[in-house]
Length: 119
Image (cartoon, rainbow, N blue to C red; front, side, top):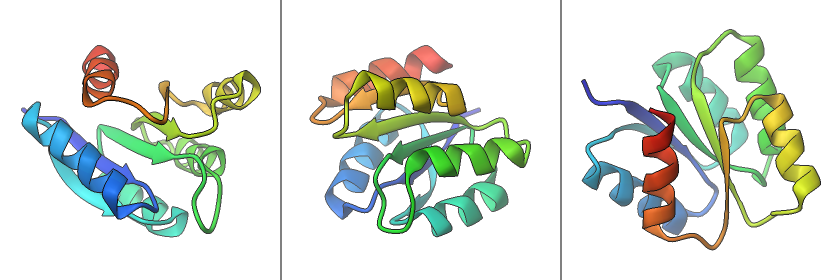
């Protein structure tokens, strides 16, 4: 059975890039969200196996979203994808429950490698 993925990024370009890359690998894209509020609603409704999460969204930061979905008991794996690569930010994301962290810019191969490793 294919793994269900929710893509969260305020950039339509990034969502499309991630979607196209993961679809080619056989992942099922069940939803896309341009902001945190939509991301949380979709995560609760769709219970995806994986969420790719931009760390800086118009309405909240990725770590807040991770905390909320983990507090709700979702087992969704979260890969944070962010232009912010400082080790302190990466560490904080991992402490909140992120499964992995990709720093922009990245290649489709980087994304596939990280996602495949999680499963």
